[in-house]
Amino acid sequence: MDTDKKPLIVLLAAPETSASVLYGLYDVLMSAGAVYPDMVVGAPGEELLDVCIASADGKPFHCVGNIPVEPHYAVSKTDSADAVVVCDMYTSIYDVPKARYPREVDWIKRMHRQGALLTSVCSGSLLLAESGLLDGRQATAHWAYRDMFQRHFPKITFRNESVLCLAAESDRIVTAGAVSAWHDLAVYLIARFCGYQTAIETAKVFLISGHSEGQSPYSVMTRPMDSSDGPISECQMWIADHYATAKPVEKMIARSGLNARTFSRRFRAATGFAPIEYVQALRVEEAKQMLETDQLSNDEVGAEIGYDDPASFRRVFKRGTGLSPAAYRKKFQRISQIARPH
Image (cartoon, rainbow, N blue to C red; front, side, top):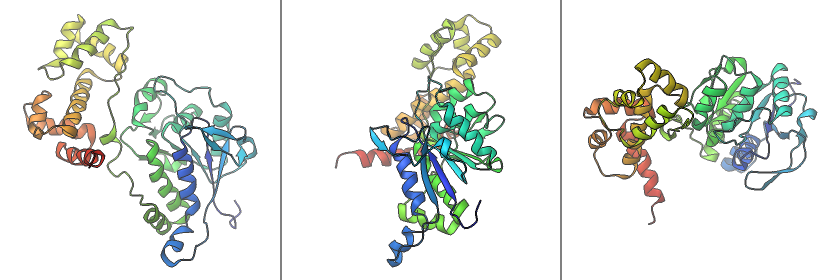
């Protein structure tokens, strides 16, 4: 790279991309070095990054929400970059987007071979997964894609709790979680290419504080129902109404008519969870809803979902959400108070 040139960051977008991710990243990255001095001393500084938008063919299109996008380049015309951001490209959790973006995937692999840092936001990591570049590595995306990754990309260790996964940073790969994780990724990119001081200053301008608690407090249990395995799906339906029962796994095994080992194997194949993990996740989901809205004490919530021992409830809840029940209540009841009419 010519050292006189600004670092080039290419935002890869498609019609399935969120405007908030694409234009949010574009605005914040373009402002690095320029806006903070303007806000503080009234004299804009120099833009420190060169930021452009690329797509498969470079033609104008409309992204999610019918928002117009005019890419600067087609991927075939983009020969080099210091960093690539694969923006979110929404897909249903039941619809693996393999072979949907062949030109983009080929380009991603070429950019990585040429030394670019590859990053992604939310479902953008599915393109990195399809490229094979995440095989044997840790990565993240929106927490709702956990089961998809486990089923269709088993060579990847999915970190559903991570907002910004840096485990493969030494291999020039960084993945970010749900769509608002672009905030964290933007600060990371600015720090990497412009220095920490510029990153801090930019964060101050845009009030970006990051998601230090990770994705876990926000995640919701997905409950795939595999109707092809009748005994297992029937147990799923039963436990949904009996999650607080004592010895729930033993009772599901008895209902299924299977031996314990076979039941465990088939349950994991159908749901992605071990039976006890499924029960615990289901209980935590119910507890979260109570903590968000009810006036029961934390210990009473634990008892309602099947934990007579408050310590056991706190331990299971924190393992599932990353927060204690009290901290979770404080965080999300604050949101409900903001949303409540005044």
